[in-house]
Length: 278
Image (tube, rainbow, N blue to C red; front, side):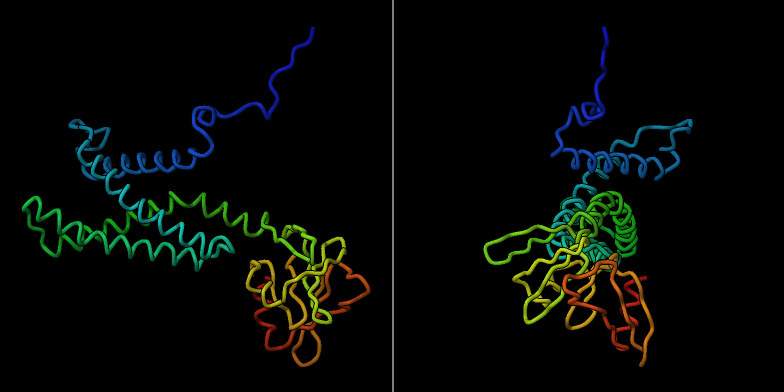
């Protein structure tokens, strides 16, 4: 009699069994906030060091930190949803991430100051400007670290999606075709019709214009080489210097009917092309 164990596909991590896949990202964020608050409060004073003789759990500070993290998390989540819809759904790059982080910190500042003033009025306390500024700076530094921890995985997933798993829907009359970015060598225009060329060489006519595609496609992968063609970075096979500072580019994929024998990059676009390809 033979026995067979569970296959790899049937084995699930313990937490994924207890928590649904939809709730898993939120559970991760809650866990990060809790651990972050514990670490920060245990480093805040000597009495909070676990190895100290007078150690006592910083309950009040821990709860205050949780409340502050939730406050910052709400601001970050709303801003992340905006950036995801506006920018990250198309491409994820350093400049956009910096703007996301900076704008989140600005919103945190705008909310921190009035909230701090209101709390002082309610508690009838008085906070000098010096301590208000120091408190704000500490809050911004901790917010920067916290936001980085909370959204590093989300940004990485979006980056992977934007450069690898993304796809474009191509409509041609009554026919609709979905192509992943990985399977596209280039788009080119001929007789006012734009064609999509797959890596295998198959050509599909589209209802797009090159201008529309230039706006839609991820420019980390695709570049408008000239007025006639948009090329995928991985489709480039050879780059040759020619006269007047121009470049001649050959693709790995051969296009049907030799519609594109060679691609010329003007000397004005040469630097942008070389920065993109490298």
